[in-house]
Length: 293
Image (cartoon, rainbow, N blue to C red; front, side, top):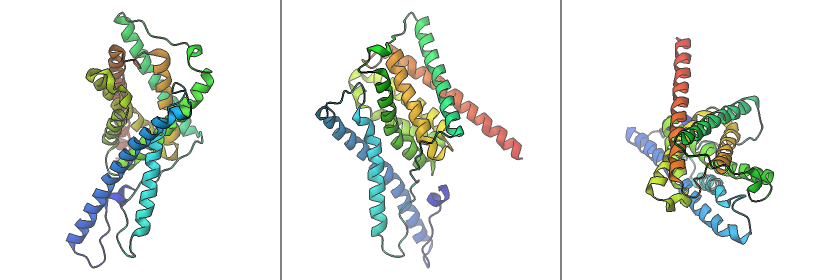
């Protein structure tokens, strides 16, 4: 897939100028896909936000806006297919698009990655709560029985919503960016887009939102490592990780109402865990490299 993006085939009989033109067109198409996905995701989320009260769906159980990224993927795929069909015979193909591979089959590899993600989140929340306790701030614990509706229903709907987001962010956009860039850079870009998409936190002030953005980028780096090479299992791995993050915030922390200290603490701990994951990944890559020499 990476070669398909980087190496634009020259048109028969064309000179170097034509080859450069094709490469430039492919580069433009690559980023056009990112822009189309992002805009479609935002527009779909806005429409779903308007639809939510009309369906009388309790937002504490499920936010329909979480399916905005899935709608963004659908728009990209539909537009790409239409553009491919409209090409005249012999014209250069449309810029390569990473296939959207989705599987909810819990293979051994997928379950191992989900378990690794759960362990990392246990460490993250443990560090956060421990730091808050040392600072004289007791944890804000929410009883599962006090949430809207039965907790099992909330947990099930939250998992569906998390997968609705991750179909776009990690199963599609991360893979698309990784076809040209490194896992780290791709994860940072996805984290920035993912964070700015959460407009519900804009009203809590610049400091709060800055801390929130640091958290989303750090979590995106962790997710980038977890889903790397997962193929169709990326959705299940990322969706489960995202789901556990949401449940952890709901039950253990109180930043949904703009608690800056809790938000900053969680962001700092996410950075620590992300740095640890990156260090571990680089160590593994170094050992593999030495083993192949």
